[in-house]
Structure formats: C-alpha cells, structure tokens
Image: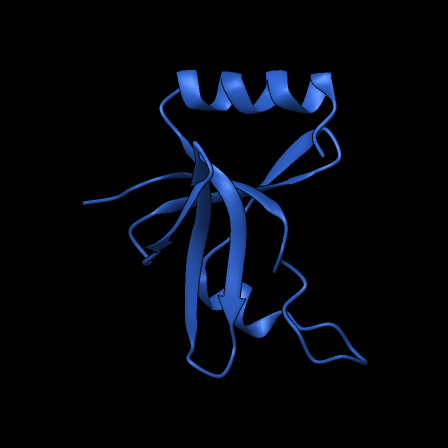
Length: 93
C-alpha cells in the first residue's frame, strides 16, 4: 500500500509524462515489462531498449537498461535485483 508521499511522487511522474508501475523481469522468457494497474485493471506493457526505464531507489531514480534488468541478479535466489521495483517509463520510438 502506497503512503501519501508515495502517491504524490507517482502522480508527479505521471504528470511528467511517464507510465508508472511495477517492473516485471522474466529471466526465463528474457523479457522486461511494466505492470500497470488502472481502475482495478492490470495490464503488462513490454519494454524495449528504446524505452527510458527508471526505478526508484529511496528518493532517487536509477536508469536501467533491458540488459541490466536481465543480468543483474540476486546472488542466492537468482532473480533480477530490479524485479518488483516501482518504475517509471517513457516509451521510445
């Protein structure tokens, strides 16, 4: 559940033209998607190298490439370190 300050940050991201949601990294399928929920409907937007993908780490954003999302793995569980993080995306051409 988002706190009020998290909700405000997400609203600002949307006003700035970003799609917002949760980063989904499927290492088996080699895909990265943005999970977006709007009015209780969830959709998955495939992401590509031309997209500007940023994940929030505390109060700052870190730009992440598709390659980084797929190759930066947690040591013991073997899952992507970026999976499940709040993300904002500007779709490329």
